[in-house]
Image (cartoon, rainbow, N blue to C red; front, top):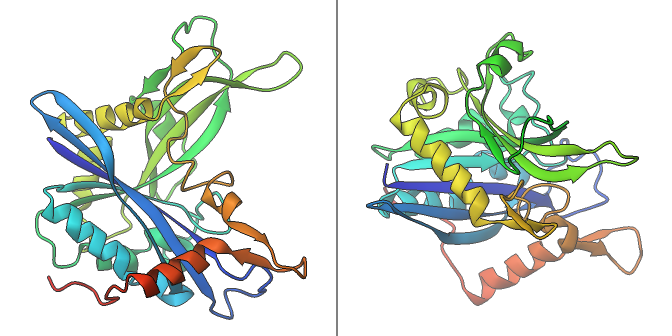
Length: 294
């Protein structure tokens, strides 16, 4: 595999005091970034492809956001046939995977949205992926500051998911320590994917061959993901280590959302400055909101 793209997506609601948001549709800002990874005869290049933001009503946000479909098309036209699609559910740092039959519970991973992204594009392999962090106690026998675990068979066996919709396929161990009172833990970034969720939309065998079963495609994808963590390297105690969370600018509580929201003068209402700047940008640089013809 000579080309791989990472598409990272998140959102931020615009009204911080609005209640019953599922009952009364509001406006949210969809934002994220696309990363391009290229392999030219063994020389691997990682670089930003595009950052984006657009305001949408809640109903359109999880069904047909044109900015995402246009970006997928741009990546495909640039030669990226394999795209890792990483998304986060808003209002929570965990996806609700106990009721995957309902589109609304999967947010940016919903079958309706995935269908909208890939519809009409030939020879495209889209891999829905979400990430999670947890802490482990480092074994005294493990001397490496960074470690990757791609043989996750034991994790698959103990995964409490009888419907077999979620599969952990990759774990990255980082030397970063957290904890107090002399008991320190190390961070792990876990990658998971969804299977048996997108019938007649995505080829489930593609997901299995690319992320779960051992083979050349999975080997390339895991290598590129590992290199991306090193690409956004962090320094700890004078040592360079792979970045535990290279997506923290987009997803998570410490992401862009932390610096985007601030109180209005009344001290009660949150103001979404990213939504405001996105609206200003759309006026200064008008772009068609219609989906590109395919």
